[in-house]
Image (tube, rainbow, N blue to C red; front, side, top):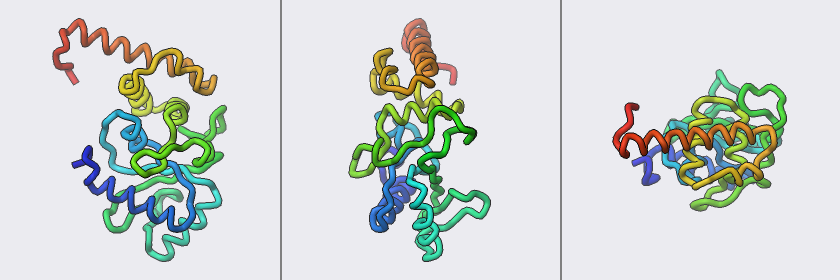
Length: 192
């Protein structure tokens, strides 16, 4: 169900997008759902949205109207009430990963998004930059898989912020090591 877009995660994503569009919230989908939009199929249990800081007040108003539910433990985590699906809000100007200031901050969603299946999704270079800047295992795995799914090579690094280029090259080398392992194994099944 997930990969045909009919599961509750996709339903929640579209409901939240509809709310955002009705209330003038500029957004870009990031995280796992953006990875899917950029050709690597993987599941996720939530949806991440990039918005401008001034839109947080509108989202809080939507919570007051019970169009969304807030997570009392996390200031920028919400739930789509019909599906119960969690979604996180990331804000322009904040920093990925630990949140500590670094060379890359979350950009303006309009400046870095493209339309995929009638949804605004962060573009591929920005998605890869943010995943590399976050420095999490899953994010590096996503980058390796995005490299594979989009047939990226060293030339793509020139589209990325200088601070993440070495990590991109390391992910590219990891993808090549994976490919070499598969060739040596005769294309057989891996042990994972």
